[in-house]
Length: 146
Image (cartoon, rainbow, N blue to C red; front, side, top):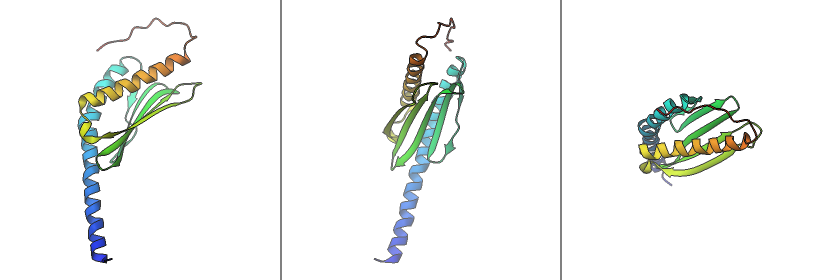
């Protein structure tokens, strides 16, 4: 096999992969991170700390922490040309962690999609938390709607 062709092919492939990584980063910034900021304000008003612990070219993470040992971690990771994986990991004291993951296409991501992902993951986290505290006394706290 021609070594010039091999080198040329690898260079073209690297450029193409770099373009998809850039597209992933662009979608994360313009759609997912923007939506996270809206969600962050709401959950912070309701006792959560929200952060973005990982910000790399091909990965982003979003953390919603109710306590040091009770939190939701969402990881968005580029896995191929035009595709990425979303992992939601829910941690609650005294229970096994819950994991959900799915593959998605970059072209399907918009603000509504991102909002649905965050809301579904937060709902699953609260359901996981409620199972843990089923026997605990009721607390009279009001959630703040913003």
